[in-house]
Structures are given as structure tokens and as C-alpha cells.
Length: 126
Image (cartoon, rainbow, N blue to C red; front, side, top):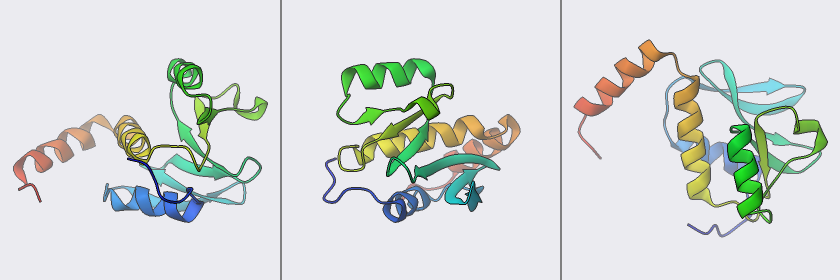
């Protein structure tokens, strides 16, 4: 889904919160706003790169940069961490949503996730 406007922290935050996932909260780390999921950093904005920072794996980061270097990148600051930055005017909102949902699940405790999945399976789809 192409986006009309480049992402800002405010629009990235709004998209993340619109997913209505439990255990998500606003936080501040290193003087910058971010969102935490299950008490762990989930998504944030790099003030020096003016770009969102997403959790990923090293393998996925390498793949994304190889197939879409116009969108995805990292800097020496992020080299040692399984993180990737995305150009706000290029990143696909569908990719953002998929990444956020996957990372949210990965950060959840298994007991919580099992209960939440069971509740979701029993609730009517809207």
C-alpha cells in the first residue's frame, strides 16, 4: 500500500497504536519518544537519521538492504544490533504493520500469547 505522505514519528506512532495490541505504551529512552511492547522497546525514531527504527534479525536486515536499498539502511551506530532503519518516504505501510505485529508477538511471554491467541480465536471478526 503506497503512502500519501512520508512517515513522521507522530504518524508512525498512530499507525502502531491503531493496531490495538495490548501491552503497548509510550516511553522515552535516551531522551527520545518510543513505543514499548511488553516492556521492551518496540519502535522508535532516529533523530539523527530522521527515520524510524525497527527490530529485525541480522539475516532479514541483510536481505532487505540487498533487495530494497532505496528504502532500508543502517548506520555504523546500529551495526551491532538487529535493527533496521527505513526511509520515511519509501517504506511500505504494509511492511511496517507486518513488522510491528511480528515483533510484538516475539516480545510477548508465551503464556500471555497463548491466552491472547485463544481470546482472539473466540472473538467475532469486525
